[in-house]
Length: 110
Image (tube, rainbow, N blue to C red; front, side, top):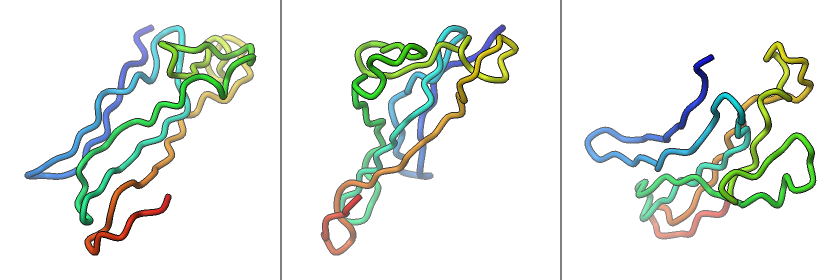
């Protein structure tokens, strides 16, 4: 079964912002929670990056593992709809956060 890979966030046309690739899944693990930070300067998008919170949110949870000391991942064998009897919802969620200033140089709050 050939599944998984990485994802990037992309915005723009002539001048584009692109995030670094973020690991999503392979045949063994899947990361289901992501936070994309959109960084602005004077109202213009300057940067996109994936916020990494480490693994404190999943420590001690039996279905999770910590990948590279930065991502909480679920064993794909634990996922529902994988025909393996799993009971964990492995849907991917992406939260957006904003950082920086608007065109009037007021600081964003998020």
